[in-house]
Every structure is written in structure tokens, then in C-alpha cells.
View 1 (cartoon, rainbow, N blue to C red):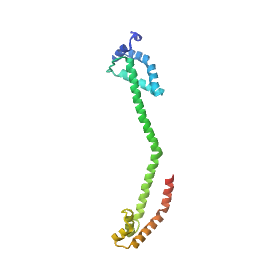
View 2: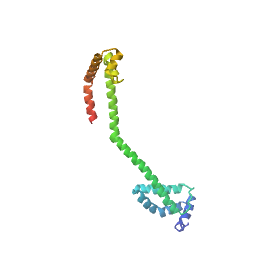
View 3: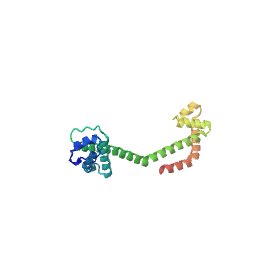
View 4: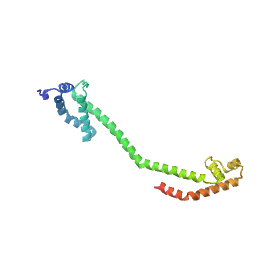
Length: 192
């Protein structure tokens, strides 16, 4: 049985490429601690540093097509550095996602609730407007939806200005009476 401690790093690497477990174990013993310290300095989290080093060793063992142009140690340290870059990128994305999620939890929920309340309130108003007498409803809708003046409405409907004014006033009174309690409740809810 060969004494793997006497082999150079590159000789051991060649044996790893031939699936020699003992050569892999020797490389692992030589570099695991040093690579961990290097990774830990870069990420400052022990578990993440361990994971990064383990990923490098898994890659080293499972890929028989790795080509090393200089020393194995240079390759391993460079691999750690690139893995750390990936880790930082992933954690930055994760951090941004968590910040975004936190912002949504704080503000998005309220926006959604406010939007739903607003839609519901608009629906109730539309329903109450639809219950107005036909001529009153027509005048109200021309004023509020088509943004016509009282004079324009009077001309279009062949009515006097006073009639249009009275119909608008009555429509607003009816709606105000029906919606007062609802508006009070909605106002209290919006203040939350």
C-alpha cells in the first residue's frame, strides 16, 4: 500500500481523477482546514464556510474532467473564491427578496386591503345610484361620470337649469342619507 503522504498534491490529484479514494482523503486532510479558514474569512459564517468547502471537495471528486494548469492548491483557493462570489450573490438576492417581502408585509397588505375596501365601497355607491329614480339617476350620472355642467345637462335633456339643479340636489341627499353610516365605517377603517 502506497504512502500517500509522500505524494505531491498534483500526483494525488491525478490519482483522484482515476477515482482513488485514498488519494482524495489525503487531499481532503491537507486542504480542508486551510480552505475552511480562507472561506470563513470571506463569509464570516462557519456553516456557510463549511458548506462552500464541502461543495468544492464534492466537485473535485465527482468531476474527472478537471484540468489544472498550475498547482492544485491554487486551483482550490480560486474555486473557493468563486464559490464565495456565488454565495454572496445568492445571499444578496435572498436578502433583497426578504427585504422586499418585509416591505410588502408591512405596506402591501394595507394597500391590498385599502384597494379592496375602495372597490367594495365604489360597488355599493354604484348600487345606490342605480336605485335612484330614472331621471334623477340619468342627471347624476351625466354630472359625475360624463363631467357635464348643469347647463349642459339641461340643454341635452331639454330641462330647465333649476330642474337639473334640484334633481342633483335630491340625488345627493338620497345618496348621503343611504351612505352616511357606510362612509363613517369606511372612514374609521381607513384611519387604522
